[in-house]
Length: 184
Image (cartoon, rainbow, N blue to C red; front, side):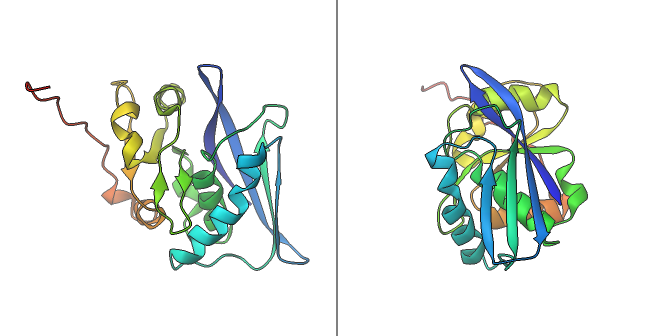
C-alpha cells in the first residue's frame, strides 16, 4: 500500500487529494480507479500503464486499486497521472515508500513517460507549501509553480527523472526560475 499526495482544482483553490494505491490484491491483473474520477482521469489507467512500461519499469501483474480521496470531491484532467504512477511504483517496491512523505505530485503523462503540463500549478504550489511539502511538476509548469517564494519545486521532463530523484534524494534540488531579462 502506498499513498502519493496530489491536488484537485476546486474553482481557484487546490484541494489535497490522497492517491492511495494497493497492489497486493489477488486476482486477474487489472487497474481499478475509484474516488469520483471524470473521463480524463479514468483514461489515465492506459496512459500510466504505457508510461511505466515505456520507461523501462515494471507494471505489476496484479489487481491494482487506486483510490482518489476524498471520494466526494470531483477529480478532472490528466493531473493525477504522475501521482498514480508514483503510487504504483512505490506500492510495488520500485521506489522507496518513505520518499513520498514530503512531496506532492501533479502532471499528465505521455505514453512515452514524458511529463506534460497541467492547469493550476500555481495553486497546487501554494497548497503544497502550506502543508510543508515540495511539489513535483512538469518542466513546463516550473516557472508558474515557483512564483510563491515559500514553495519548493522539483521540475522534471520524464517519469524516469522523477523516479531517479526519489531514489536518490541527495540529488533533489529545488527549481529556481531564471530572472526575466531586461529585454522582455
